[in-house]
Image (cartoon, rainbow, N blue to C red; front, side, top):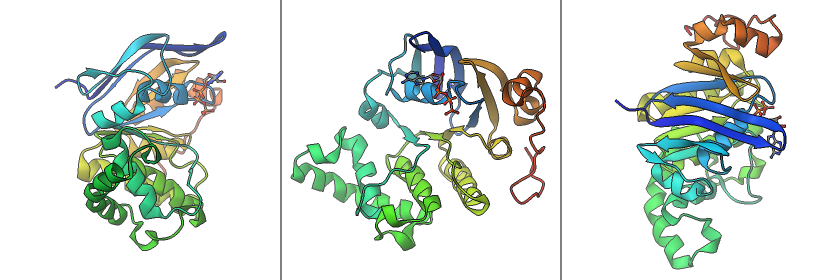
Amino acid sequence: MSALLSVNELSRSFGGIKAVAGVGLSVDQGEIVGLVGPNGAGKTTLFNLITGTLKPDAGQVVFGGRRLVAGEPGANARLGLARSFQQATTIADLSVRAHLERAAVFPALGRPSFLLRRSAVMAVRERAAATVQEILVFAGLDRVAEESADALPYGLQKILGVAMALATGPKMLLADEPAAGLNGAETLVMEALLRRIRDTRGIALMVIEHDVPLVMRLSDRIVALAHGTVIAEGKPAEVRADRAFIEAYLGGEADFGAASGPEGEAHAA
Ligand SMILES: Nc1ncnc2c1ncn2[C@@H]1O[C@H](COP(=O)(O)OP(=O)(O)OP(=O)(O)O)[C@@H](O)[C@H]1O
């Protein structure tokens, strides 16, 4: 079976900085891949290249057998590639449900709904309504559906970010630091949601995360970046023990808490 996502020799520099330098990786359908590495390793730039918000200097991204074109996030969303962001961003005074509706109509309409004719927006929204209701329940947001998203606790805003990506109907979700800024309890809720997205929907996940124990628990496979290149790749236990990974991440003094969870309980990696 061919991979759902293939990244081949992808490179991108900013001035003299090689942010991503000849990266190759693949993600299979329904697989969870953790993308780790120290600050400045190139993780977010790689996400931007994969989702088409940045143009590569060289290399290509193939998703679902099709070569993706940079600069066309709407088109890529229609193919089934979705993304959630490190910072939860909400629109003031817009309800949780309305945020999800906007996300659900995005692939069908291909551009922000405020640029489109009202009748077209309404037609697509009607079709999206059932999807939105289902996702509200799935993500545990149904009880706050009519609340203003910007008034939610930060943990729920981050859950909403993932739910919005889900509302686009993806085959694959790229999650940029889903646990950043969350407390221990919120992190566990996010972890459970990400796992259910894969387990019950077969959606592949690629997750950037600095919470190493979390990403090791969650992922089937880890790809470690440093200075824009892949320095280690494999099962979580293999990468955790990899010398290059330990050196790059914590200057050779890493003890990533083995497979301990936030509450200290043992988890199989
Ligand atoms: N738009 C930009 N202009 C100039 N330099 C950039 C730009 N985006 C990223 N860089 C540089 O590219 C390198 C990789 O940055 P990137 O944000 O991809 O790393 P990262 O692994 O996501 O880091 P972090 O974990 O801190 O988010 C860094 O040296 C960064 O300063």
